[in-house]
Each structure stands twice: as structure tokens, then as C-alpha cells.
Image (tube, rainbow, N blue to C red; front, side, top):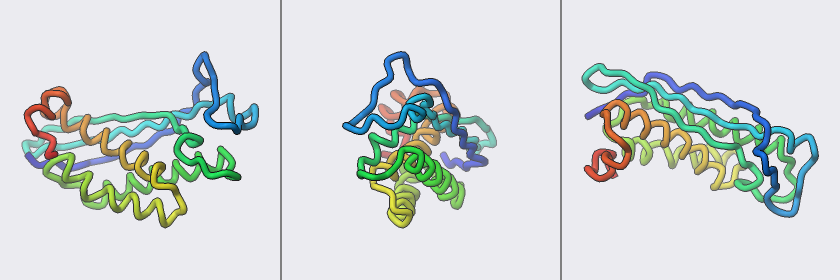
Length: 161
């Protein structure tokens, strides 16, 4: 079946840290940085060849200190750059909105996201994170449109892997 991405919305929501706040690595960061725990949300609208339409979602914490371990880079700068990279990934996914399978879409978009990340001075792990966030939203939307679980879609080889 063929699919078409109609829209992709991207949000960042600042939340309080979990009840057991902790920091990765030796740098504990500034006290103000520990007060927020930003979440990235992607909501993708997908249309099938039969005209049916649904949405797919993905979300994750912007754990920039885990993604980018380069010394001397402030957390707020890493967050800003990661958000910019996710927005770039969104634009890449919208450039060619039609696709036959989630894996085909990933194969087309992932190298472009990685290239854009390198051009922006991002580490590959951050670029992969941005790519995966969009990939997960695509998979969620395809599974919703097909009315099947991701497990069933994988088992039946319907995601194009």
C-alpha cells in the first residue's frame, strides 16, 4: 500500500524532572537546568492510498547530555541545536511525502538527516535520534491506518524491512 504524509507537527514541552532526578556523566549542570526536563513530541498525519487518514505519534526526552558528550558545550545550546535538527528532519520527511513502506521512507530520509546533522556540527547520535523520532511517528501512523499492532506488522513483514 502507498502512503502520503499530509502534515508533521513538532512540539517541545517542558516538564518537571522525574521524582528521582539524576545527571549523566561527571557534569551535574547548573541547578536551573535540572528544573526542567523537556519532552519532544511529533504528531504526523498520514493518508493511505484508499483515502483513509490517521495520525502517528512519537515522543522522547531531549537527553542532550546523553546524546552529545562533547566537553565545553552548554546544555541549553545542545537542546537548541537538537530541536533545530529535529525541525530539519521534519522538513526532510515532508520534501517527498509519498512512500510505499516505513522502511523505504527511512532509507530515503535517514541519510539526509545524518548529512544535515553533520553539516550543522551535530554528533551522529543526535542525528540518529532526530531521524528515529520521525521514523517512529511514521511506523505508528502506518500501524494505525492498517489497524494492526507493530508486532503484527513486523511479523507479517508489512513495514518493508
